Image (cartoon, rainbow, N blue to C red):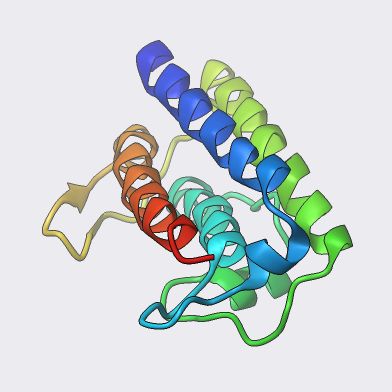
Length: 151
């Protein structure tokens, strides 16, 4: 799991660069031909990690129900995100990862509701979910790199 968490930390550091190097206006801009923006992708990444690892393990998530409703699969940006919301997402990028590492170290993940992802991979445990999450984050980071070209 150490390597999985190191990869995830690298991903989160890259996402942090998007937050620190783009204005609020740029974070909220949806370029023509895209369904979402930079900040939605980052909020979505945080949300999906929580749902994959915690919700499907039957454990409480570290994010609000409102955040889930805003960023879960199938949503799109409905309004511009405020700087306060950006700051919250920025904190969650690392606090959720650190808590997940701690919870794995404490063997908190016992149960898991198995499911098959949209790409056909069957997630059978919180460990699988954490590993699959790195793929998911990379996918959205790639989308963000494309969006960046048009803002």
